[in-house]
Image (spheres, rainbow over the protein chains, first blue to last red):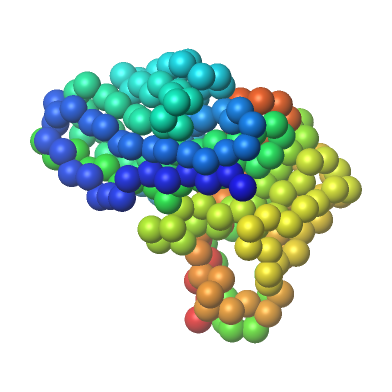
Length: 111
Length: 113
């Protein structure tokens, strides 16, 4: 079945540091890949997505590239801000199946 | 647009009590989902629905029931609450199709004591 593995947190960075959160997946067929973000006390919201191999999703300075050869979708940001502190979830679906999520990675950015 | 609305936001239940978590969406989405989020465990799918009158079990359906009588509403019923059901519950909705975004409610924090 489909599954997502993402790096364990928490991750603590200083403001303006470079961020990478690793995500790898196992799926049948050709899944769509997503990063969702959960700010404190809120529900999840879509950060970015990619629907086919070599696509790059980007939003708010975050980027992730769909790598079929390594079954990966790592999240990156060149310079994090305190406001980026949140929990980040990698997720996938294929066809019309429900989203399958990773365990989430908590990011804390300190000034 | 309100999007996905969940009620209540917080609830404390005693062991053995029952309750219904309400979820409604105003985006005319066919698909609706219930997830639970346990600390450090990500989100696990409880039940989902691909349209009115159709529901399917997810990864962790035991102890829960759902119904989907309208496109807008997808209530989650807990019968005989147990401490293991202490969690944050999220409802979500989406349209079918590759790569479509799921929209989430704000969550219901449930504690069973």
